[in-house]
Amino acid sequence: MIYKDEEPTKGTVKVMGQNLRLLKKKDLPKLRRKIGVIFQDFKLLPDRTLEENVLFALEVTDTPPRNMKKKLMEILTYLRLSHKKYSFPYQLSGGEQQKVSIARALVRDPYILLADEPTGNLDSRSSQDILDILLDINYKGTTVIMATHNLNVVKKMKKRMLRIENGELVKDK
Image (cartoon, rainbow, N blue to C red; front, side):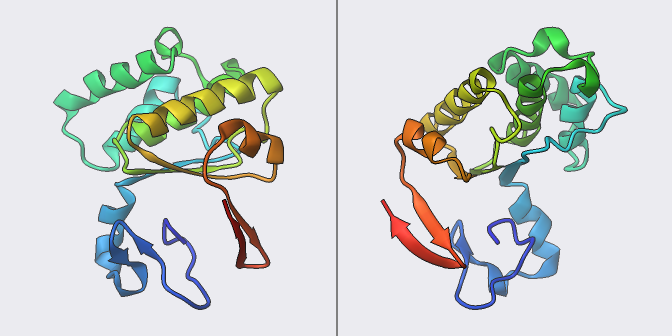
């Protein structure tokens, strides 16, 4: 609902002060440019290199080409992936693929980062690495909203937790 991929059956969803029910369809891309999304299954383009996967996020938002390579290298260096920029997704570990997904989400400097089960397909070491990155992103000022079924992940993060059951908020701690 934050990304306006689904509509609420009742109530109001406000994102960055904008009531999404009142948002015009033509204004949706502008809102989505401020929101990065990380998926559990990475959603990488298999026929493109790591570099091309990340640049794609800039190309579809009409980022001027002169800014793309600099932004790409900043984010790949931050995520310790610059040495793999010509690798294809099948050549990367699960943790590296998730970092590419994070790079693609971060390259546009989002205000909000949505992470849907970002550690769900990873081993414990890669999971911890991804959690550390998400905590650092949050520390630097980006709001990170993570959906997970893994209570251990939530406890490790020591952040605000909302628990939703059957569409109802049952816990806010």
